[in-house]
Image (cartoon, rainbow, N blue to C red; front, side, top):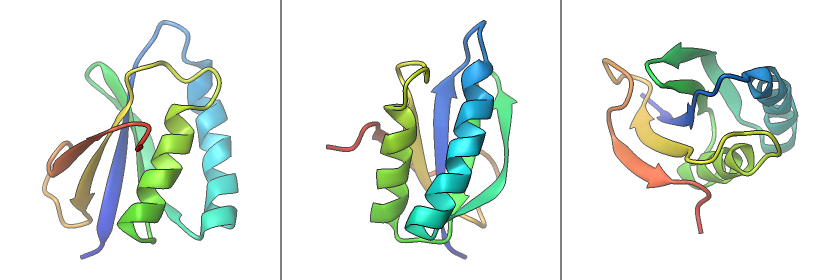
Length: 99
């Protein structure tokens, strides 16, 4: 079991930002030593990205950078959970960006 942060971003009609964030995740992996835990996916009215492999502080810093990236819709939040969680959205909600 390891810390997992889900980055929940509201879906919009224009979803070009999803590919941009996917590319940005590669940069974050190299820079911060985290890993994209699973492929992102649309779930209801949000798109969720999954990151793990680093401390909670580092993962939330990365999630904050995603949330404030140009083109990413406002209203993103993180769920701090673990890799053994049985479903999405379980854990502690954290508004992004972290202050």
